[in-house]
Image (cartoon, rainbow, N blue to C red; front, side, top):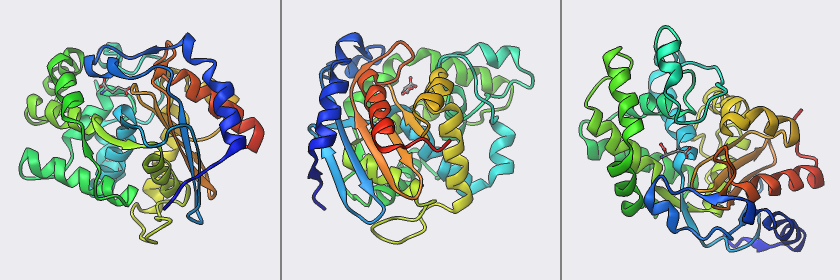
Amino acid sequence: MVCRHNDELEALVREAKKMTGRGKVADYIPALAEADENDLSVAIYYTENTCLSAGDIEKTFTLQSISKVLSLALVLMDYGKDRVFSYVGQEPTGDPFNSIIKLETVNPSKPLNPMINAGALVVTSLIKGKSAKDRLDYLLAFIRRLANNEKITYCQNVAESEYKTSMINRAMCYYMKQYEILHGDVESVMDLYTKQCAIEMNSLDLAKIGCVFALNGKHPETGEQVIPKDVARICKTFMVTCGMYNASGEFAIKIGVPAKSGVSGGIMGISPYDFGIGIFGPALDEKGNSIAGVKLLELMSETYRLSIF
Ligand code: GLU
């Protein structure tokens, strides 16, 4: 599938790119600091299998928190919502993605939602498989089906870099293990979580996955119902209420589409029944969202009237 370059979209990218200087590439995961903060690319994948792009959409990036939507979909499919939501809540937080504070102040001590790190770690701990390798292969196979791309894998360098430095996430795991929210071996949860976050793709792959959600779980290319409708609906709702960290409220008002960002600078957006959006712009704002990516979505929302509200 060839993605056609589009001049109108390129003009929006040029405009949004002016913001990159005001952002900063994430460096708390050392390997992410290597990204070029001036990058900005976008792909739009339509339900009828056409695609428009602007910027260098060949560049790959790691999913980071965007993977939280995909691991959530997988465990919801395997366990059902009652079981999953007995471990993790459904409410937004006003705290940063890696905040630990609510684990202690909220009772019972379960994470508020699966889009923050604590909740995502619990979700990852539920991924099925007999061994660590099985669990990773199972998740990768699901993501390859979503992108219809067998080549997708994870970036070892980024995974190792996070695994070595991710002490707050470890602390949250141990805290939740104490309260029997998280089960199993913390180091193997951390190993799988950091590999999950390091799954790598380009904006076109991401836009295509967004398009699966836009079609309520049905794949635009293969026609397969990869995710049951109800699970796709739950994931999109979380994207609206908690997908853009503690900027989700402002994002819903300004832009108004289900979206999930990651600290690599990726954003997956969804225009229901119409298209999926994949953006990569590694310079982040103070909340951890791609600064130019959010600006680009704002311009796209105004130009194409995307708000679902
Ligand atoms: N791997 C990252 C972490 O846990 C994901 C954070 C994000 O993208 O928000 O810190």
